[in-house]
Image 1 (cartoon, rainbow, N blue to C red):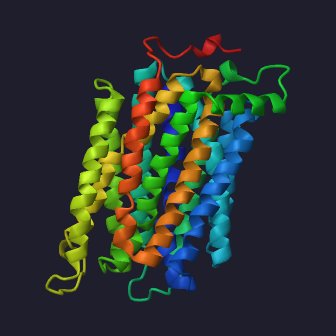
Image 2: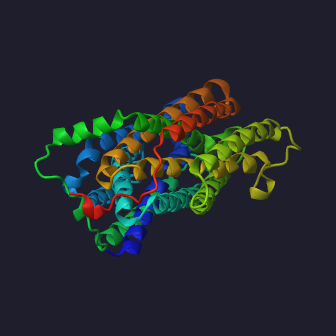
Image 3: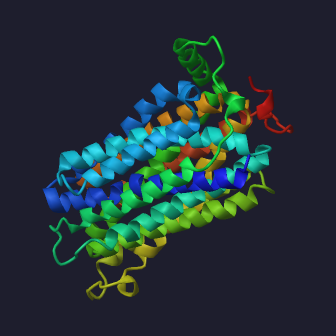
Length: 422
């Protein structure tokens, strides 16, 4: 099995969905400009994305081995290709909601399949956690690319212009390229084919039994809280830049890319560090530094508009707060891939599909909760208060990870070989 080609395909699939899923912050800002939508109304886009991810993940994760991981990924890319082509043809808020619903369902298929496939192409826990971080770093590179793609189609002089929708033609082309690469990439799934004689009810029962294991329950709590934190910041950072720091629309979107860039870099570095350091030690230090950064950056934002009043025309004239706060991504970066890898590498490969489904379900629920909470706080109390809210999940996550680490069994053996699974 050509592992490098499979890994490249997984990375490109993740890259495509990184652009689409994390464009929600940009689109939230644009639908407010184009369709007269309030911040609270716009926050529902996160729910269309994440609840469709959660629902689809719960329904499909337990029986993906029936249809195959590769077929699942091909189906999801095909659906998104069609939705991207339709987006500029039907410019409306309902079409925007439909796009994110389709993207959410498709990502459920992609993410469960990708996470499960990682177990087929890695040798042990260290290899697993390292590749997981590299994969997630390329996901953030996709997020970073998305900010610049979307901003290049936006006309600051005509905020009501819908020319930005043409970016979806380009995204359809990238999706087609990912589909063709996957189509030409062989993946040996024989080690995880569906067990004969098991019904769909049995599959769902196995997934639910997995969910009530104490270690898994604590893990899904940590995944939920982390994504609540990350998505709340990521989805509303462009609006924060525009409404609180008074940056032009295109610059607000571009500078939100600092968060994606710092997260991508953080995950790439973590992929190296975690080969030599305990995941819990690294994550604890990162959470403490992240909380400190919030306490430093937001007061800078409070005084940004009280400067000399010079017009903000580009990166060189942007306030310091626009650069400092997004650096939180550097310290949040290792958390999600590390905890995912820890739980997956403590399970036999045949359970990676169902476990990946649980990861996606609770991550999606956390993302929806975070975005909607921040949206409502943003409307009611302002952007600074909304972002101070991040201190609560940061503290909660540190406590949950302490419990997760205490409950994790010692493991010195490699992942259970795929050839032993029948």
